[in-house]
Image (cartoon, rainbow, N blue to C red; front, top):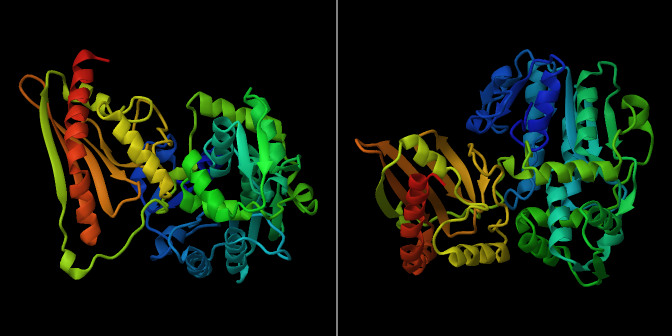
Length: 474
C-alpha cells in the first residue's frame, strides 16, 4: 500500500485488515502512523516512490497505488508519471501479480483539466507493462475530510449568496467514501476480476448547483442563491475557494479546473463486476456531516505528505544557513504531564491566548496569498499526533510528555517552527518556547525583522496563557 497516511489509504487499511489480509505500507513519514489504531497490525517500510522499492515489494501479491502529487510544485504532473513508471518497473522486478490504482473520472475524448489528464496518464503508465492493472476512476468523493467535501461544506455554510462560474451547471456523479472503499477492496481481493478501467460513481447524477442545494438542505441551512457569471476563471475561483475554505489555492486550482469536465459513469462494467453502489448522495452527505460535527474524522485530505503550502526557493550561496529565534522560558507549578496536555490543546477553538486579532489578520493574509490560513482548525480538540494540522501549522513532533513542534504551512519567505520543550523541576516543570525561522534570501530576513515588533505582543502572552491554564486546570 502506498499512500497509507493519506485520506483514502488511512481508511482502506482497516478495511483490508478486517478481511485478514496482510498489509505492508510504504510511508514517507512513518511517525504519522504511530497513533493509527491499526499500526501494530501492519508492516511499515520507510521510503518514497523516488527511492529503491525492492524491500517494500518483496513477496507482494497486490500493490495498491494511492499516491497523488496534485499541486506539489510546478512540475507535479510530469513527476506523477515518472513516479508511476518507477513503481511499475519495481513491481515487475519483484513479481507483483496485480496493481490497483485509484484515479479520477473524465472522458478521454474531451479537453480534460491538467488534474484529470495526469490521473489518466498515471493509469496508462501503470498499465504499460505485463502486470494486470485495475484502475478505478472516481468522481467527486463525498466523505468527512475529503478535499471535495470540505470545499463544498465551507462554500455552502459560509456563503448564503455565491457568485459562481458556469461550471455549477456541469454534471457529476458523486460517490460516498464507503462505496469507494468497497470497490477498492473488491478490486484487491477478487482474483478473477478482469484488468482495465472501471468508472465508479454513486446512484445520483447532479449538477454542482444541485449538489450545493442538497448539502444546504441536509445541513438545515437556508436556501443558497447562486449567481452564475461567465468571467470567473479557474484561477480566480481557486483564490476564492482558498479564502473561504480550508483547501489552499494551490490545491484548489487544479480541482476547480476539473469542475468544467463532466464526470459521470458511461457503462455498467463496474456494477456487473463489483456490484452497485450502496449509498445515495443524500446518505453520503448525511454521514459525512455527522462525522464532521462530532469531530469523528479518521482521515482528511490534508493528512497526505503534500507540499502545496510551502513555496520552496533556493537561497543564494551568500545567504548562509541563518536561523532566527524568539526564545521564551517560564516555570509552572504543575507536572510535566499536565503542562504537556495544555500545550497539546493549542489553536483551533482554543485559540492562541494573546494577540488574537494579529493571528487572524495573519491567517487572512495567508489565505489571500494562497495558503491554508486559520480556517483548518484542528482534527481533534484535545490530542495531537504527528501529521496533524493546527490552523496554519503542521505537527512534526509530539513526544509526550516533553516536546511539541509545529511547522508553519503558511506562505512565508522561509521555513518557520513553533516548539515547546518541557522538563521537570523540584516544584513542578519548566517550559521553553521557541519560534524559529530560517529565512530565504534578503526578503526572508526583511520579513522576520518586519514582524518582530508583533512578537512582543504575541509570544509572551502565548506562553503566559499556557502556564496559567495548566495551573488552573482549565
